[in-house]
Length: 116
Image (cartoon, rainbow, N blue to C red; front, side):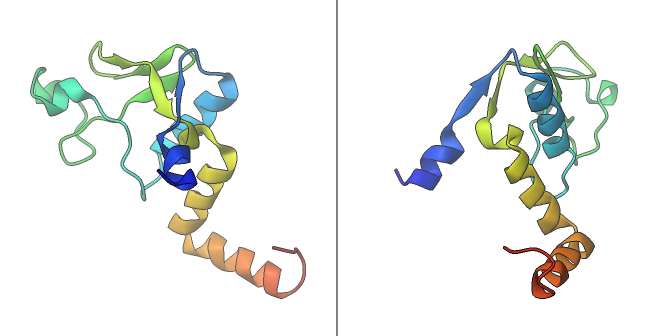
């Protein structure tokens, strides 16, 4: 397994720090990623009409210091991929999903305002 594959497979477990909760939820809100979702709803173990089907039939989990929770049922999860709570990873993904921010950053680099 390559170093980047190993990095992607690393997990963190609850309890999460406040900073990790912030970045996990920020990651969940990005349009370019597949967020963690309620497995009970996906597997039709709970009534779909009781869940907010904002992802084509899937409900996003919400990170808390005690782990992930489904806001619509009692499903919980106690782990996340390490990169999901990494500020640099989340910032990079934000740039990729926001062309205006990416263009601004490229312009600043090209103008020698900042160095890459």
